[in-house]
Length: 291
Image (cartoon, rainbow, N blue to C red):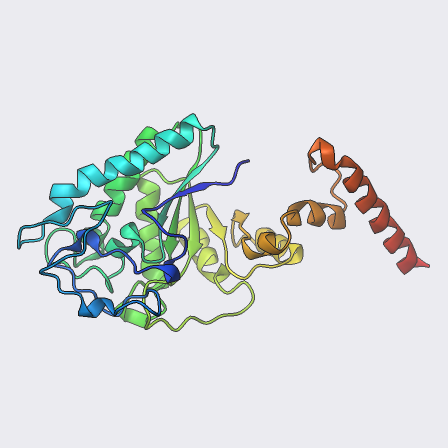
């Protein structure tokens, strides 16, 4: 399966650029958001003079009805990305609703301080994210899966998204057509106090999967195939995603298959001699241990 394409406005990681504020309106105060360390604090930006945004035009009216004015236009950009992914032959797409990007900035109460129908309660904060998710699902072939990545906690306690609220968020996205929830966390506030460790976000996936009965993907400091197998066999996730291990070793999956004795994994034809050598070296190492 091809790597899922995440659909997000711009940038690479949440810590590399200031998270988007929903439609730059006066109804959304910046708050303690994340961003580049060398960038001016978002709290110093005057809402009366919003920054130009290439994706979401800043509303000029004082009521800040950005979602009503520009929401449909913005949703079409997500739909266009889905359609391009379809034409390119992707097997799966993912809506990035985590880490302080545009959709995430509606979900988290740390960034969404609107007082209209798009802010306040969880149902209101989820209104626009669900509109986008439904539009994407309608444009994506029914036989192909669509995932949604969420920040299952803002790591700030009750002031932000909590793990319990994340269960409800996941249910809402499922009802809007998501097939699986990619369970990440944080990167929405400089006030966050994450608890790092091995597989540190897996408990969030576990909770959503088993409380809401939804398919999930586990991510976050998962580094070896024993961890992957233990997560899957314990029913804590349906898929496990690794990022940094593949940066260090682009053929991590093939090497793990050799180590586990998996003979069914397909290798690209130009690599078959490398596969055979890796298997011989594995067998010799095992013989040495038995001797």
